Image (cartoon, rainbow, N blue to C red; front, side, top):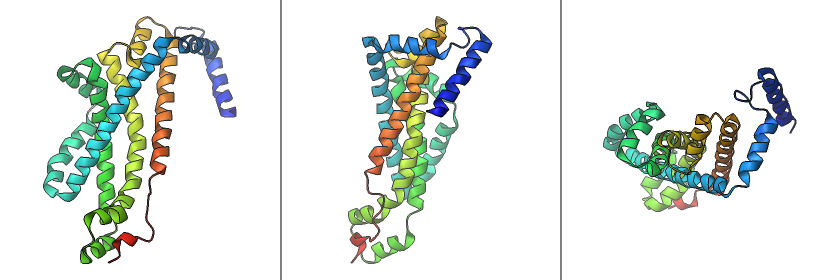
Length: 246
């Protein structure tokens, strides 16, 4: 709380020093504008619309990245073919993908596709690294005693990969929100957070820009905490590895 009060004071002093609401509105003005927006039904429908699309993109990107990493870990040919493409997606500017995807899909699905594309490389790299960090001794034991694949998966593979997967999910949530909202700002699908941000910028309503930016940050942090809580419920290890026993 003290840290929050400190930065609010810094914000207030900076607003007083600037002396221009257009450039930097004061905390009280932004808080008042938020209070006005939050009671409007359109506010919640806007948040829900963006939330659904970006969450869908996150899920799709995570699933595709995981499946590609598993395939790359099993077959060297898949890894050779997929890795350069995934690396190119990770290195390319987000704006380039937004413009390119906008040619292929309508604006309603733009945030879903762009979010998935940004999350996929992170998940792919993390899961592939986890596969490479598996306990070689346990894998050899499982091979010698011909342990069924599903039992080896539960005892060796999942515990090794899960920490990397969890880290990728935490990073991916933030990337999904950043890229998804950026896609909405460029594509301007009606009734989304990105469209509201663009309108506020176009009309020079800086307080609204700050409010919607804060909403995006809050939603991103809340989603990250939710994903982290869900992942903590999963078993991360199996210390005794009874499934590998002959």
